[in-house]
Length: 341
Ligand SMILES: Cc1ncc(C[n+]2csc(CCOP(=O)(O)OP(=O)(O)O)c2C)c(N)n1
Ligand SMILES: [Mg+2]
Image (cartoon, rainbow, N blue to C red; front, side, top):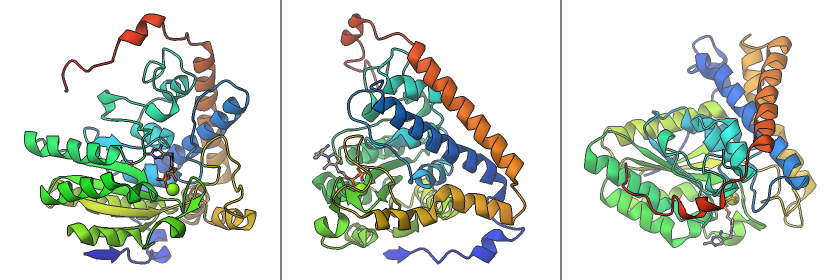
């Protein structure tokens, strides 16, 4: 069953009975935190303070915030290498994420994972995976564990639209559907896999239709609208928790920056005009506008929120800079998990 979301009704959302209105401030703060955090990471990388691969999430903030806000703290979250935003939205501290990017012992993966391998099992944040598509069967596996143990948890798995062309996408979705697992699969369709546009790599560009192959719902979602993302995720989570099986959400979004720190925002594969156009529907500005229209936000409140998140980011940066490197002996720890919990 492939469906598309109903067009978002601005009037309905802006009315006094707008669903989720009580969450708007917290979502705005979370998106702003991700944006400012990522900007600071870009600066620190340019200064040589962060090494290795690093993929920023700027432009995609509403996807992480809208989806994760629909989860319970004990649900499983697993993502790819562009996962700083999901980690922060999940509640990993800015300090522990920044320190990890700096390769410091105080990082969430003790400085041994880096940007692509953020991890915090206590928050059920199961990575951070650098191999394209590798997390998709893992997401099915976490859902299998939940079903087997009858814990009522769900799993949510994030990957890009290019990863949806990888074999493990089909293997993961097939088993999840076959075993009716409580899994939500999220394609973060930002239009490009490195420098390759989706229409150059996929036989069909309406990726939500792929759900039909497995007899599960496939929903296309406006990824710049945090409210639409939350609504779609909530429905998929309810379905999974009720024992009705997996869903595929194709969340359409934009990355404003290069694929990684090694390529420019537009490069040779997309034009500046295209990039400028995508910024017209900035997820943070869309939510700000909605809040202002509902008298939920004024200039002073926005300035206070900005100052608050900038202080969190500055503190995280200082913490990362001041933290020690991992001890050499750490090479031998955390290689095998003694027992899954
Ligand atoms: C198996 C594998 N093949 C190739 C790569 C190199 N690679 C890293 S990211 C990427 C593109 C993935 O794009 P997409 O899935 O759309 O995610 P996005 O980067 O847009 O978030 C590729 C090909 C890899 N890491 N793993
Ligand atoms: Mg992509």
